[in-house]
Amino acid sequence: MFETYLEMSGFGRQATLTPVSKSDLLRMCSGTGAAFSALVEKKLLTTHEEEVERLPLVTATANQPSTLSEAQQAAFEEINTSFESHDTTLLHGVTSSGKTEVYIHLISRALKQGHQVLYLLPEIALTTQLTTRLRRVFGQRMGVYHSKFSDAERVEIYRRQLSDNPYDIILGVRSSVFLPFQRLGLIIIDEEHEPSYKQQDPAPRYHARSLALMLARRHGAKTLLGSATPSIETYHLAQQGRYGYVSLTQRFRGLSMPEVEVVDVRRLKFQHRMKGIFSQQLLDAMGKALSSGHQVILFQNRRGYANFMQCRTCGWVPRCDRCDVSLTYHRQHHHLSCHYCGAIYQVPDACPQCEGHDFGDVGMGTEKVEDAVHQHFPDARTIRMDIDTAHTRHAFEQIIDDFASRRYDVLIGTQMVSKGLDFAGVSVVGILDADTMLNIPDFRSAERTFQVIAQVSGRAGRAEDGGRVILQTRSADSDTIVQAQHNDYLAMTATQLEERQEFHYPPFTRVINVYVRHRDAKHADLLAADMARLLRASFADRVLGPDRPAVARVKSMSVRKIMIKLERNASPRAVYDILMKVQNRLMQQPSASGVQVYYDVDPM
Image (tube, rainbow, N blue to C red; front, top):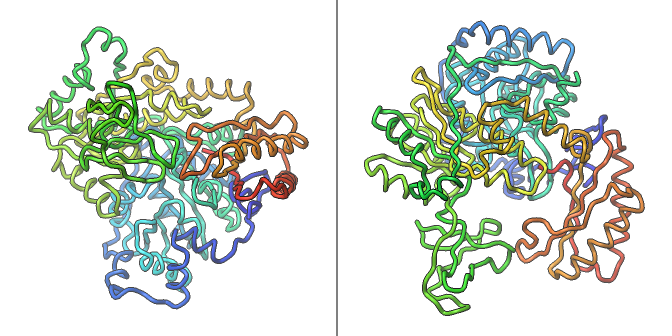
C-alpha cells in the first residue's frame, strides 16, 4: 500500500492515482470502515432516515451571486484567463479581500457549463458560516460532507453522488476528495496552506491538496488554490510558471488592514509591568473595544489551563505513563490529560518524590486565558473554542453562531479561530504567545508562525470601524515577527526560500520521514540504526538520522525517525522499490519481532 500513499501525496512529477482496496477507501471516507461499508452495501439507515436525508438537503431559495467589486471582477477574469493555459491557479488575496465571492462566481460559471464543483475547506468549523452563505445562492444543489456527520448522513451523500441526480456542489473537508464525481469541472481549495489538509495518523497518510490536484487531472478539471498566506511550495510553483497566479491586494470595500502592535513580553516581565498574562497595551485595547460595543478575539494555541503542574519543592512534573510528555492541567474538570494518547489522570494529593503538597501550574492554555479575562473584565461574556468545547458538529456551529450574533463579547480559542471565520463585530485581536510556534524544531516553524499570525490578525477590522492586533512575544526582534507585523509575505518567503535552498529542504527537495516503532527503546534504537545504514547504501548522504523526535514515546511505543531528502526528479517507483527492499531486509532480523515501520511523504 505504500506505493499508493506515495502517489497519493503527489510524489514525482508524473504521479498517478493507484487504485486502493474498497475497505481502505471506505475507511478513508468515514473513519469507521466496517460501519460505513455495511450502510453502503446493505443500504441500512438509522430510524432517523427522513431527518438524515433532510440534513444535506436544507431547503433554500437560490439567488444570484452578489455583484463583484472592480478588484474582484478583475481577479475573476484573470483566473478564467489563467485557466486557459494552466490547470491550476493560485489566488493570493489578503484577508477580507472577498475571495469567497470570487469563488461563488467561479462556481456559478462552472455550473452553467454543466460541471460539478468540489469546494474544500481545511476545518469543519469553516463549513458553518460558508454553508449558509452558499445555500443562499445555490440552494439544494449543494451537499456538505465531513467527519462530524454520522455514518448514515455520509452514506446518503455517497449514494447521492452515485445516482442520476448527484449534487452539483460538494462543500467539505479533506475526506471529500474520496467522493465519486461524474462531471467534475472545478476544484476550489480554500486556505490551501493549512496543514489540516494533511492526514497524519492513522494511515493512509495523504495530503488532500495533492490528491485533489490528481483528481482534477483525471477529470480534466481546473483547480483554484486560494489563500492570504500561500504555502511556500505553492507560491514557488506559481512563480516558476507551473501554476497560474492572480492576486487581490486590497480588502473588500476599501477597508484597511488592521494595525499590528508588537509587545515585548520579555522586557515587560523584566520591568514587572505585565498584568498577569496580559500586557497593559492589550488590556487597554480590550477595554476600549468592549466599552464601544465591539468584540475581541484572543488567540492562544494551547488548550487546557496550564502546560503542566510542578511540585514547587522538588520540581517533580507529572508525566504520561504511555507517552514521553508532561500532562496538561485542565482546571474545569480538575484532572491531568495527555494530549497525545488521551489518557486522563487524577491530580495528585502529594508529590510522589518528596511527599510535598505545594503544586504550581506552569504555562497557560485557553482555560487560564478565560479566567484572566473574567478577572479583568467581570462583565464581559466569554466563550472558548477549542477541542474541549467544540468536540461535536453542533458545538462548533453553536459557538460560531453565538459569537457572530454577539451573544458573547470575547472569543478565546486555538487555531480554530484563525481560519477564515468572518465576524464583523471584532475590532481587537490579541495573540498571547507567538513564540510557541516559532520555537518548534521544524523547518516550517517560521512559515507556520507567519501564517497563523497573519490569519488570526485578519479576523480584526472586517467592518468600517477598523481593527487592532496586539501581538505579545518574547522574540520581538525576530525576522518572522517583524515580517508578520508588517504583513510582508514576500519578505518572509524570500528569507525562507534562501534558507531552504541552502539546507536542501522543500520546495527544492522532496522529504520522506521513515519512522521505526518498537515497545522496547533499545530495540527501536538498534533497528532504526540498521535501517538508516541500509538506506545509506542507496541514498548516501541524503539520509539523516536516526534521531528521536520531539515526542519519542507515544502510546507505549518508542519512536525513532529517519529523514530522506531527495531530488525533485527522483523516480517514485525506484524510491518505493528501495524502501521496500530495505524494509524486508530489516524484517528478516530476529530482533525485528514487534517492530513497526511507516512512512510519511512530504510531512507537514
